[in-house]
Image 1 (cartoon, protein in one colour):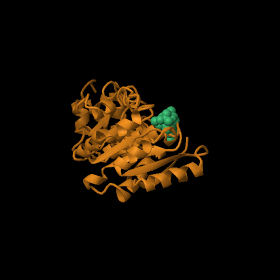
Image 2 (cartoon, rainbow, N blue to C red):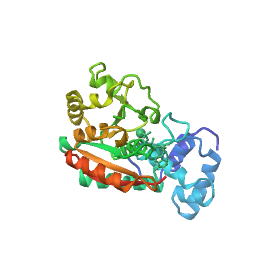
Image 3 (cartoon, rainbow, N blue to C red):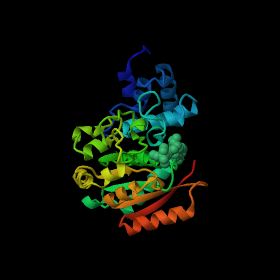
Image 4 (spheres, rainbow, N blue to C red):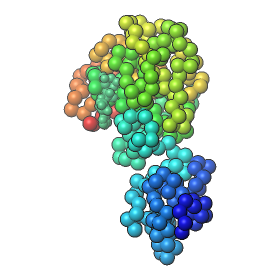
Length: 298
Ligand SMILES: Nc1ncnc2c1ncn2[C@@H]1O[C@H](COP(=O)(O)OP(=O)(O)OP(=O)(O)O)[C@@H](O)[C@H]1O
Ligand SMILES: [Mg+2]
């Protein structure tokens, strides 16, 4: 076959389920992304025809493609936001985007389901959740970012807010500048243009922390922050808010009260049960619902 004729390949390999996502076939997607040569596609097509297999099955039997290649193509076909290393400047830590079929991301989707059942019920006062933990480096930012990504993969209009004005990280995870962000929006020095859309995902935006203020807790206590969250709740289905460690001050609690709910993160073999209980109690007294505790193992 003459090279560079994806049209003919497209006609031949249209055997997989179709969707409104990527209009190309599995084979064409893999050829266009450089994962499959035209010659190999021909071998696969022959095997597919001879043995009555699906394209992916034939390719794997021949050892020409791996399961992850097929998943990659299926993800494209079904408009599932999925990233390939080197293709985007978002961090590899966003496993929900780079390895959506891994066990860890399977657990994130299970967590998403739990949160849909226990908190997000569609009403405007239940659209935001704070990700909190007792101490530093327990994985709040990692979890907040990946959880937000799996919500967006469900087609939810998703916003991730970095309310850790002390040690912000979301801008690093998403490869964004961190000039104007939440701190500036609260003080009225930035408008909605500080909400950054991340094009790698379906309907996904981030408000970074912004340049560090000297008085983070005071800013987060202002009514302008509550008003901002109320405004955003009218625009997004899910708002995930990253917070500083609770042992760094009252910021996390302040934020959790404003979102109405908190997801408590504990790090396996690191967090102290007594501290967790204290944080859970204080959130409860401050009228933030603790909708769940996640054990983060890493
Ligand atoms: N489940 C996990 N699997 C792999 N790595 C993880 C996991 N959770 C967290 N990490 C890694 O641990 C480090 C700390 O995570 P992260 O920055 O999310 O913690 P944090 O609680 O937000 O910390 P900080 O107190 O600095 O805000 C990061 O390098 C992150 O990639
Ligand atoms: Mg963090």
